[in-house]
Image (cartoon, rainbow, N blue to C red; front, side, top):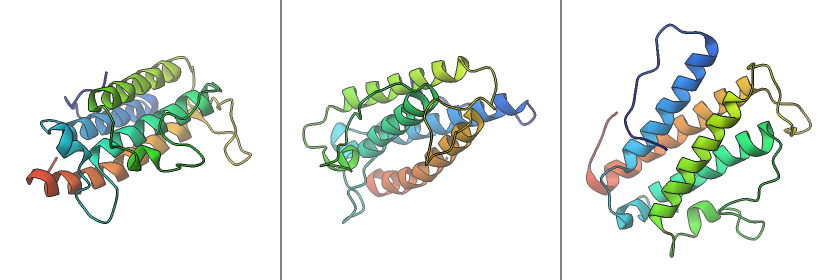
Length: 170
């Protein structure tokens, strides 16, 4: 389950512990940015003309977790959740009849799946079963990329949240 209770990553730990802790911190940050808002506020496109919303970010990050850990690392043949060839930005754009509860539960499930896939790998040097642009991708690369992906989108979440209700920081 994704929680908004954040624990600061350890200042001195081995590489794997450090990377996993920073990823958990970033996941918790997105959850924290969504805490306390109504379904309508989560779906609000707070910075027109962008279609970006906190709900869209949650759905997008569920897709990202699913892609890197299940498709790339584990080699699972799983379909996209929210986008398609005809709707490549469906995670952000198609929110009219979206259940916030379902979207958050899906994100939490994909985070759990990612944790399980990560725990099943012995070394950060192990490469995934699916290539990226013709090249193998290590668990280390995936974890660093996921931290970067969340950090970038958490910056968006900061701006969205401030625009919605004035909450800032963290």
